Image (spheres, rainbow, N blue to C red):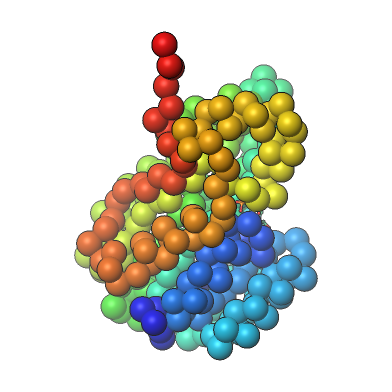
Length: 255
Ligand code: NAD
């Protein structure tokens, strides 16, 4: 197992893409810190599933948008699992509303979780990776909207664009320590975050018409890409975004 003896922290891993990533990295042999936000139950359930696979796992409640809690998440991982080799910044939120109606409260909430949380989790994880030596992996789950504009989700698009420049910048500062930093940019994936769109027949059809492969992706497909970036095989990969979107980014007019 290529991640045997390694420890991974996956933020927001009680559901959706984060849950699939936590299970996938455990399958490769990693011990896992499952992070949940509001409700302990689903986080504990993922932790139990991982322990049943024979791995060590803990479930830690932390709002990554609060810097002291982001730091505590990494500290608790070290206290219970001994080290941090892989950080997956997956936690994210979004609100669907026109730019002209976005409140400061919603703006701050999206930025806190999606960007500030990823920033300070990465900082605390990198400090630990440097202390323990031997390099590490930081993988951000951004979005195709780190590049592609998304009307009615302006704070979300701004946060993911910020995540891209964070990744491109800190990869340079962390390269001397053999810590790689990359983004995975999913298109439309079937999870609770976008159920408002995917469960509405009109919006769903509109969405499918934008996707050349004509289907919505599964969290497990994203997890496979993350598992590669976390693996020893990806040791020369840093500073880039890996898009997984069924061709959405290449969609154009058919005349
Ligand atoms: P999801 O709602 O299932 O997952 C989001 C997770 O973030 C949840 O587990 C939630 O508890 C957690 N979270 C929210 N606020 C938090 C906080 N303050 N602290 C810690 N955790 C918090 O949806 P998902 O689709 O699995 O989203 C995972 C990531 O994938 C997000 O960053 C999202 O932007 C990104 N993404 C999703 C899609 C998609 O189509 N589903 C596409 C592109 C990018």
